[in-house]
Amino acid sequence: MQPSWVVADPDVPVQGSRRPADGSYGPSFGRHTAAELEEGVVIQTKRHSILRTLSGDAIVRVRDAVHALRARCDEGKRLDGIRWLATAEEVNLGYWVLFVRGLPPADLLTRLGLDVDPDQVLTREEAGDLADETDDVVVRAGASGRWAYAFVEGGPAGPDSLDRVRQLSTGTDAIDMWRTVNADMSLGYAEDGRLVCRFEPGREHERTGDDPDRLAGAMREAGLLLPDGRSPYQHGVDVVQPELRALGLAESVFGLDLPRAEVLEGPLLAARLQE
Image (tube, rainbow, N blue to C red):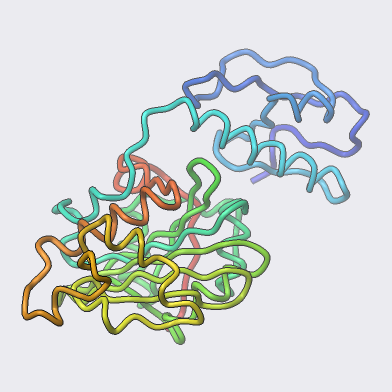
């Protein structure tokens, strides 16, 4: 598929559209320079979803400008957060969601070692059909606020899945959370290529990482640790709703958002993870 408009030179006027505050693409198009793009002009393709540009420095400038614009638009929107993952029937067979700060979705997928085709934009149903046809795991990616996210059905997948969050975090921060069909759970936080902390909600005393106590204060506030810093499990007490508490911790500490309708119904950039 050929893009409708391209950017070849930052000083050459290009066809674009101004994106309204509600995040949709406007119906009218004008002539704008790449400098104006940085003030809020979005390059539109025939599929109204993927930024496509020619090679050169303009790619980086325009891509980063659009990514920043998306973050600014999201700041004024009502966010879904991520706590809904704990109760949504659509993910009762498990999920794996990864977040990385300050990167566009395509770069997140690339850091996972996946081959990215900008034209492969799939709904959840279409991704499921592709997974059935190929026996591969299909990873779908989007962005909200300052974070890009990747969503996988059924829990962690592929080789070295527990190390993926560390790989994503080079030069930035990354978080992953997962739950399997057997209700095994984990939350991991990585920073600039090192795993800071990982723990299983309900068994917080077994947390690992280079700085396993980094989130201890937030864990106490979330009710995952007792005021003395010990795990309720160590006192023979089960944590009530540990998954919901862990998701709430990540949502409040890092400002994470996973747009529910976008993930469950909308088309997202997708790539195959071969196991």
